[in-house]
Length: 182
Image (cartoon, rainbow, N blue to C red; front, side, top):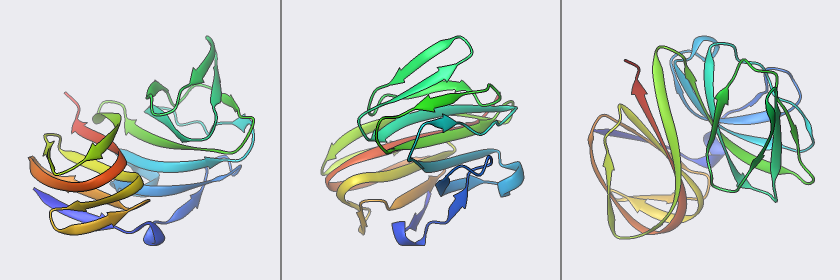
């Protein structure tokens, strides 16, 4: 297993595809325009349209803020903090927020990769089993030591390949697992 750490201050902020906001790219599989998977953290300052991503499966997790409601073709879907919700990125979706929020997004290209997100509180020392092709760990708040490296709020660790990592400290983290499809 290899580990790559990126500090919060070094993560690139890019415009949304529809130009209505910014997202912070946390980790990316392949080139930006033709990614196999992408993990990002979006700041949603107002209600509005989501960008369309045909052929992409999306999982969203509200990580900051009082609430967000997604309006999908089959009806509204309220998002609860730290609870993942998966949907087709090609569907026309709008959201309603009363105050600014932040949400973590996993996008996987259908037929090439799949994935999931789990948000948990870590109080170490604990062992983290990385059993996916790629595991992206995002420190949402708090501080951890990952195999001897200090991580703070907003820092990201990408663990590639299977293995076990040692975590110590106390933090709320998102664990994003990406695997090859099929």
